[in-house]
Image (cartoon, rainbow, N blue to C red; front, side, top):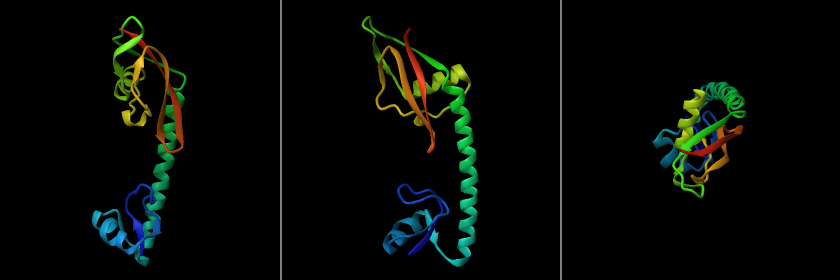
Length: 148
């Protein structure tokens, strides 16, 4: 069955894509949840306009992410945390703490979910945290964890 995606569906496609999927998948999941609609001739024009809007929005998001990257890459963000004498933190520095520090020091809001932190930082020193603001824009943010 051919369907037109109404929203981005992970591992399937993006909004406006015309796809061939199994009948049961379309009837039982995609269409009832509002993720897709049946592909008809009239809906093809609508799909084309959805793709154009998606491409335009994607280009704007990419440009914004690149400008944000050029702002944040040269800066070193300082995060103060309570630490013991050996340089180990009593708690940890999480992505939310880093996002708050970025906003406080650079006046740039960044979503904590865009910071790719495998595990919380638990030691003093300089750490590099990757930030992925867009599918094509990933850059390092340098974090300096100091004792309070």
